[in-house]
Amino acid sequence: MKLLISEVIKKASNAKTKAEKIKILKENNTQALRSVLKWNFDPNITSDLPEGEVPYNKNDAPIGTEHTVLERESRNLWRFIKGANTLSRMKREQLFIQLLEGLHESEAEIVCLVKDKELQSKFRITHAVVKEAFPEIKWSDS
Picture (tube, rainbow, N blue to C red):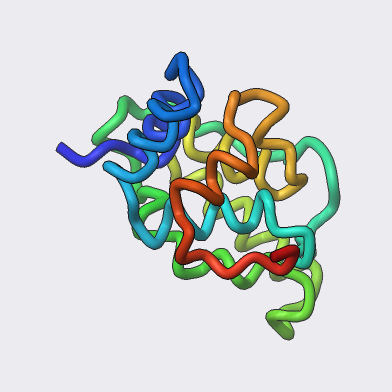
């Protein structure tokens, strides 16, 4: 069974060495994982959502029974980036809350952290590790 993006990030975060972290990220390389990490670490990507706590109802369904997964929803993340959409603020925030409520709570937590570029505040994954794991990502700072 394929791991949730939150499981991949947690597994990489718990790895003891930089090399192990890179190996885990590479073994679970998906467009969705790269999109989430790029949103978090690319300084030119800014969220078009209010910072801080998001008022949503956590989906407490067991893993495997959630309504949707970040792997599938990642193609819609651009809607929440500054300059990438023409949605009204209210519609954008509504869609974001719907996204979070459909995801397993561990994946919703990842999306909330990434929205504020705070992934590394909870998980031991650095920009350097991500750049080494995914050299194909075009970073605005390189």
